Image 1: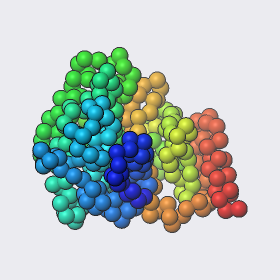
Image 2: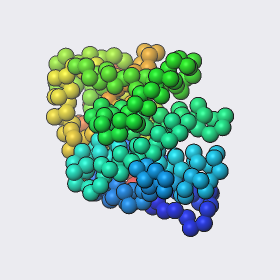
Image 3: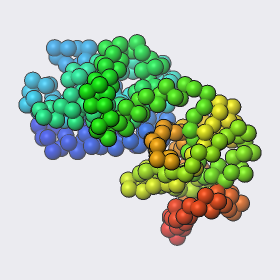
Length: 344
């Protein structure tokens, strides 16, 4: 992943729109662990270099292509605030993945503070009649980058942002309740943070832990909840199972309820955080939406086993897990076919 951000010499909304879309793709790659630590560090260092203070508010750091006074008011959301939201979200997620960046990368803390402060300029609102759409879009972007965890960990890096973010969530809930499906999803993600502080949580198994015999060896008090699927992710094998972002795809999973000690045992088995990181997903199980954790392979582990077949014993145990729950094994065979096509 390479940071290709630049500001066109001439005002060109089409060109800058493509730059913003690339930023969105880069953020998604970071969120799903498709960048190495070194790539992320270099990306962050360039973001710091490219961030610019406003002439009349030097504490606010933006990644827009020009000063706001030089733009039409409607264009400011897309070409001033949106790239700034994305850049701020990238910095937030980077520091959650690699806390040492705050000490290792010069000026990161100050730039992050300035970026978050700049994000408060419009109270997350969209332009014109799209005020609510813009607010939902901004909140969703930040939640996907785990801003809720960042705020809990660093509430004082930018207190104004923290206060506005919490206030915005409250306004959305009070004014619109659960009548807007997308708002319902956003609010549930935010409220699920409290659930993660409890001593039990939901876990999504897509590999060998779909086999009940196998997971019982590692987790003595685990409880089976039901079957579900992770949308927009596909099963892949790099000697071991992984899930990777693929729009329109889905991966079958078993949903388990873990006690704290179960999760610690799984962390050891999965090699967290060296071999697998944790990512939270929204899924539906037994007709109810929940927030649940899955292990996602790190870039370093992918490189070591990229597109290599799993051994037969490992693969057969996954197949047994599918069969015991009446799941179709299409995802498994697609993953195996993908490897064969790469190795031909």
